[in-house]
Amino acid sequence: MPLLVNQRSYPLPQTPVVVVCVDGCEPDYIAQAVATGHMPWMKKILQQGTAIVADCVVPTFTNPNNLSIVTGAPPSVHGICGNFLYDSATDTEVMMNDPKWLRAPTVLAAMADAGKKVAVVTAKDKLRGLLGHQMRGICFSAEKADKATLVDNGIEQVLEKIGRPLPSVYSADLSEFVFAAGVWLMAHEKPDLMYLSTTDYIQHKYAPGTEGANAFYAMMDGYLQQLDAMDCVIALTADHGMNAKTQMDGSPDVLYLQDILDSWLGPAQARVILPITDPYVVHHGALGSYATVYLPSESDCAQLVTRLSGLRGIEVVLTREQAAQQFELPPDRIGDLVVVSERSTVLGTSQSRHDLSGLEVPLRSHGGISEQRVPLIMNRPLPGLDRGRRWRNFDALELALNLAA
Image 1 (tube, rainbow, N blue to C red):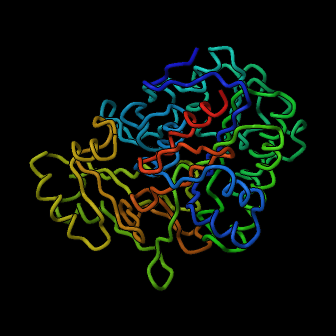
Image 2 (cartoon, rainbow, N blue to C red):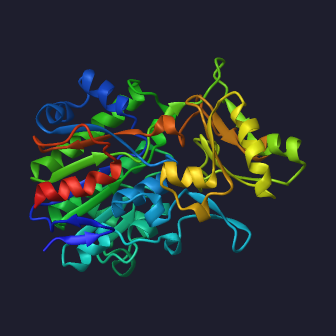
Image 3 (spheres, helix red, strand yellow):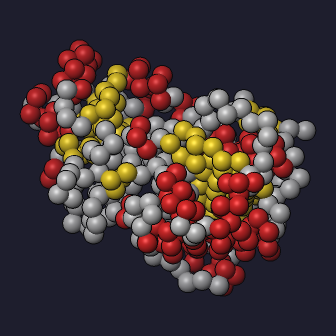
């Protein structure tokens, strides 16, 4: 009997299903790595399986998109509209990592409730609580793999089992640990459904086709090949793409919205929120291409839409209602205005609040419409696939489970 979760029907898997979210995977990363011989398994899958360029959700950040993938629904349904938000009820700015913000069940939890064995491995611990909410099974992060227990995570002694040391949170090793754990779990625990989510550390540092990027995708290709050899149905997608956000001299191309609005309206009249903000800001300095703005009066909206839209580097400025409709967002969590910058530009609050000293290379980031295109790749053919429709990254589970039924 299929499960109905958030108005979608999901067959119970008869073959192991693995859904992989490659953080920051602009489709060109795969194209460049395949073209240069770094991903031989992927080259075969692109020829024999199914490959689509799909849309992720805007804002193109980690939390909204991972939760869209595991709920099969946009943020208007599940409620997670950023990594960070302004909670108007308590007048505080908070991380959106607590499951209390989640408004919809996940397919992972529903499958576990239906008696299927489910496993989740995420790179950063910030996602673990959301992805594993009300889910019975294995759920741990590479970041805190050494602290996993049977009671809290469904598994213990992870480092010993995987045979790898605890990785640094700022490293490619964090993502490799996720893949190594996935292969070990499939070989030893044999989950019916497994979700693997990586980190975009590499994508923030290296452009497609560079040596660092190709090495990462070659590593990933080897682990995916091992999962494929275990007869898993694999669906690979991404939470967002990634672009350079620089001026011609290599310095970050930033519009500091709080400073701009303070100069227009007076100090602290408007509140700018950057939903990219998370505990791991070294590689992006909390600068992304999407911001929300809370205003002292709704009467300011029309004038500010016009003024902000006229700034260099701005792609679109929307009212709360317009943004909720266009981007499928919960209107009570996005502010009076939503501002999206162009491909090469990022948005900040006040210049004094952003520490960019940790940027070792020219800034690469995400958040806007320009990072919406992502891969959706299956290691099985889908001859009847409607390629004329708009495919989303959160179609991954539905496609994979229907293939595995």
